[in-house]
Length: 44
Image (cartoon, rainbow, N blue to C red; front, side):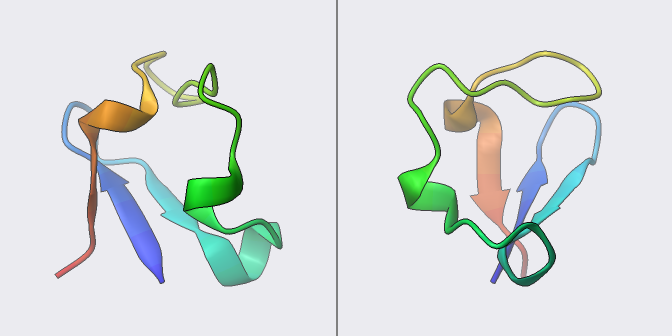
């Protein structure tokens, strides 16, 4: 599954990263714009 940053559009791809989105640490930040996990939504 992929998750998209609603601020900058960065796509987190679980398959490519090897870590499920829900297993990322709570303090994980978008590598492009620095927002938290709460600003990501599942890709439609």
